[in-house]
Structure formats: C-alpha cells, structure tokens
Length: 573
Image (tube, rainbow, N blue to C red; front, side, top):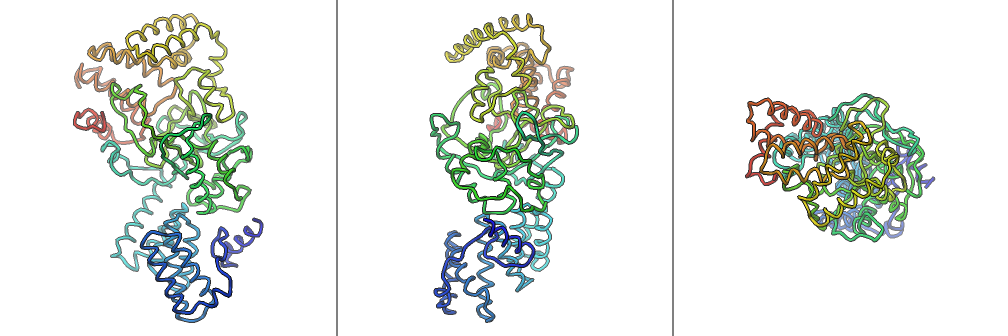
C-alpha cells in the first residue's frame, strides 16, 4: 500500500504515468505482449469495440489494456494511433464503470497526443463531474463544444455540468415539475451541496455535524448522493435490520466505489465501523465538491469484512429513494402500516455523520438517490444537527431497543425526561394502546386520550414535554381523524391536536406537510377560501411546505395543493 501511495503521489505531481491511479496491475507478461503484431493489436482493439457496443465494459477494458500496455512506449505512428484509440475507448468504459480517475487519466493521455479530441474532452469532463470537480468539468466540456457545437451528447453534457456546478455552489434545486407530477416521472439530477455545517467533536458520540450559523426551518443543510443503494426482496437475518441481499449488494458497490476516486475512498474509509471507532475528524474538503483531496489517514484498503462493518453502522433505510412516495391523503396513507415485501438500504457519506435524537432538528427527503437534509426547527450556531434513526412514535423502551443496533443508548432531552418519570401508569396505557392497535379497535382506542391527558396534567409539564409523552399514543389521537371523517369540525380539531404533537417531536417534514395539507383541504371545504379560518390555515400550510421543501413562490405551493386536491391525480391520493 505504501508503494502504491508513493507512485500515486508522483503521478499527481506529474512525475509518473501509471495504468490506474488506484494501482491497476499489468495483466500480461512482457514476452506475450512483445509477440503481438500490429495486426494482432488492431484485432484486439476491434474486439474491444465490439464488447463496448455490447456494454461488456470490463471485458472491453481488458482488451484495450492489452493494446495500451503493448503500445505505450512505441514511437511508431501506426502503434501510437492504436494507443490513442484504445485509451479513448477505455476512458469511455471507465466512465460506465464509474472509475472516474482512471477515465480521467486515459482522457489526458489522448489529449497529450491530440488536444482537439472531442471524445477525450467529453470523457475528461464527465470524469471530472463524477469526481465532483464541476468547475474543471465545465471548462473541459466548453472546449469540446467549441470544437463541435453540433454534437448533441457534448452540449447536453455541458448543460448538465453547468447545472451541477450551480447546484453545488448555490444549493438551488428546481423540483417543482417533479413534485407537481406526483414524483412519478424521472427525477431531476441533483449534485452534492454542503451548507453552513462542519464535522466536529461532540462528547456523546465523538463526531457529529454542527451548524456554523443560525438556521430557520426549511434551510437546506446538505444534499448528498448515495455511494451505494440496494433494493431487494425482504430476507432479514434474525438479529438484523438489513436483508442479506441488501447487505451483500452494498458491500459490492462500496468495493467498486473505493476504486472510483481518492475522494470516494476517503469518504468510505472515514465512516464508523467496528474496525474504526471514528474518533478522527475528517476534513470537510473530503465531502465538498470541487475541493482538492490530499492523501490522508482515511485512504486505505478495506476487505469485505471491513466494508460489511461500514454497511452495518451506516446504511440508511432508503425505501423512499428507490420508490419515492409523495405526501398524500391522511385517510388513505396515514398509519396504514402496509408492507411491500421490498427492502431498500443505502450508504451516504456526510449524512452518516449526523447523530440520532428522539426529537431531531433536521428532516430527510429523498429524490431518487439524492438525500436532502433540511432544518426542521430553528437551529442556533454551534448546535448539533440530528436526525431520527428509529420510529419516533414508539415508547422510550422500544426506541432504545432499536438503537442497540448501533451500540448506543440515546440520552436526548426527551429520553431523559421519560426516564425521570414514574413508568407504571404509562406502561399500563402503553399495553392497553398496543392491544387495541393489534385488534384494530379504532373507535375504542380514542378512550385512551382522556386517561393520558389526566396523567399528563398531574405531572405539571410544559407544552413541549407534554407532547413528547403523547407521541407513543399518536394513533389514539389520529383515530379521531378517521372516526370524524364526516364531521369536519371534529376532524379539524383532531388534526390540529395531532399536528401539535408531531411538530414537537420532529419539527417539519413530509408527514407534517401531509397532515397539514389534509387540514387545509378540510378547512377550505368547510369554511370556503374567503374565511378567516382559511387564511390562518393557508399560512400554516405554506409554512409547513417551505419548511419541508424549501423556498418556492406561493403560487407553486398552492398549485401543489390543488394538484393534490384533484381527485383524478392518483399520485396524490
């Protein structure tokens, strides 16, 4: 490994030329290579082209590599032409295999021979974009377009790179068409973005993500594309939260991604696992698009067992990133508990440094493989950013049991409050609530509410803490929404109560927006759009929408609401 790093450093400084910056080895001996005639090399290149056309990129790489290793030092014009063609096509193969730095190296080899090669400039630009070097990608693609402005593939690649550059610098993403279409069409491509945050030491978990300025609800904190995502039929180990198929597929993808670039290798190696306790603070430049990556302690080889430990501790439940579900009608979607038999998990780099809280201050939304993290509450400078690792509407005991997977016990304010209370009265209500849920007793479950309210009143807690205690009984409160579906006044009152609980527990997110939109619909239906109640609820809806989806024009949010209220739009329930 030390030798590989030394050679790679020389290459980066321009002193060496190697087949792969990540250490590809020569596949054939010198005798075999020397025995190849010019016609043999031409035949190999043609066979490589056939495999490239058949999308057998690994097979094509092997054939092109044989040509390159035989011709790399040749001064023959004919052999240099074969060398150039093989490097150009191998660069394209590396792109398909997401081996960004290998693709970049081959493209540079071609451009040393022919600076006006449009294909090499295109491959260079796409490789740089894959590496997050958007500025350099745009420059390379602009050069390609200037040489051949009529080439559609090149102009489209330039447009994509320019959008990626703007997104990474400004954090502005236009998801309006995707959202208005019910999230059913192709998702827009979203490049990585990092807002006002940094990784710092935190006492309870060694490392965490901290705000570097004040943030209001809806502030975009970061956008991160998955390193690996797997979607498979559910087949769980008895003591696992992840299926065997997901686990093995994620390991394979991480292993492949380790070879794509130094940035990706550094990111994977920095993630916590049983082999690496995660006390070192990685530099933020490791995650920021366009930043140079130095050789550092996080770049090292990892075997299958070590990558498996990374998956175990860092995989997110990602079903929504592979099968996005827009917010819909509470009467048909809320608390349905339906399962699809499909599990999906993914590994994201910077989001893996977000620690858990049972009352988090950040929300997560997926657009395909891009994870959007937004502030779900007001956040102060220096405050740690947190997300939820488990179901926030479980009892404290069940939440803590879920968190054992990550080998820690939550000590957030909510958990400390619940631990300080005398548990017997609550335990009796928990058992009663659970039995009613298991038996589908929707009408009867609402009888728990007055019992719980009397208990909470006797404790003398503030409003925030009261809602934390109500959270495990959320079904008892939302049952009123279903029971009173034909009584708008009672239904609206039940929705307000449920929203109050949810905002205390999780701030603003898609589920809060879902319920707020149902409230907006019912108020509009009962009181009309000229009433004072409508104006108040409209403000509530617009606040929830902005806090969940970011800043858009008011008209867009209302169009989104109208699309949802349109009975013919099945995507919105």
